[in-house]
Amino acid sequence: MFALGLQGSPRKKGNTDILLAEFMQALAQLGVETRTIEVCQQHIEACKEYTVCEKKGYCPIDDDMSREIYGLIRRADIVVAASPVFFYNVTAQLKALIDRCQTLWARKYKLKLNDPGHRTRRGFVLAVGATSGKQLFDGIHLTAKYFFDGISAQPSGHLIYRRMEGRGQIKTHPTLQVEVVQAVRELTDGLLQRPKILFACRENACRSQMAAAFARLYAGDRLDVISAGSQPAAQVNPVMVDAMQEKGIDMGFLATTALETAIAVHAPATIITMGCGEQCPVVPGARIEVWDLPDPAGQSIDFMRGVRDDIEARIKTLIDAYA
Ligand SMILES: Cc1cc2nc3c(=O)[nH]c(=O)nc-3n(C[C@H](O)[C@H](O)[C@H](O)COP(=O)(O)O)c2cc1C
Image 1: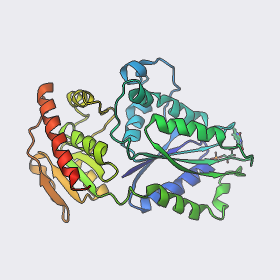
Image 2 (image 1 turned 45 degrees about the vertical axis):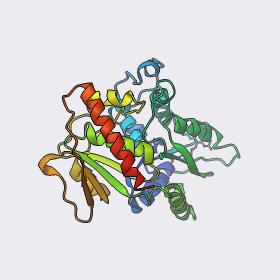
Image 3 (image 1 turned 120 degrees about the vertical axis):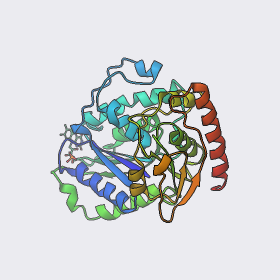
């Protein structure tokens, strides 16, 4: 399971920074893989409303959104949006990131593509503000609600703190730690218990990516799904992306992962290999299943379609065992 934290404050060691660090640490202690993005240190341009995303599903702006952040959001089971209140909303930097997620919104609502993570992804809000008014967080809540919808995450709670002004003041909050631990426990409920399953092939560019997408789409609520390759390619195969798109499944912004990394980070209970050559993993304690599937790399779209349908049928049989 992977959790992405978006630290929206420009102030280092400020209240948001401390609160999010505490939250991500509590997630990590439960065995969740975590990553925090310092949003204000990223190169993220504001949306220019080119509307290319609405027609083609990608944003032509070349910055850290297309280079990494869309991919991290798509991989995440949990997205934590953290910000101080700046004039009753999130900071401009976090808002720029959110606006640029119009690309993910467009893939979902304009291109009608199905994000394989949509059944399981959860969104959580952390926010701090200096004053104490009743409506202090209303703007953030509304923005977060539509942000989470755009990235296909279920809004799953918030922790908000009023009367926080001085740098790092939140450190002295008497109930902060207890509240964070409790919130993290509730947020991960039902996700942590899922058995981890790793799909492995050679390049992590076609077969294992398709298997992971089908498994996540059909049974993400029951399975913690990972994919990796013994010799990961620089990027996923565009023919595979097209073949999955024919079935309405969105494979955009996926990255490849090395097998050793996936095994070390996630310690999967089951590994399904589908041709990772001589480097097929031997992991003590893990159940290994071998699927005899041809390598579609360099083959026609028709060939890719055949492998795709074979994988989909195998996944449907596999997940019956986890019903
Ligand atoms: C530009 C700016 C706008 C702010 N607007 C508000 C506001 O509308 N309401 C509020 O209560 N606090 C406001 N604050 C105060 C911050 O929300 C508060 O100091 C917060 O603790 C800062 O968090 P940080 O340390 O994570 O940056 C504002 C601060 C700045 C710099």
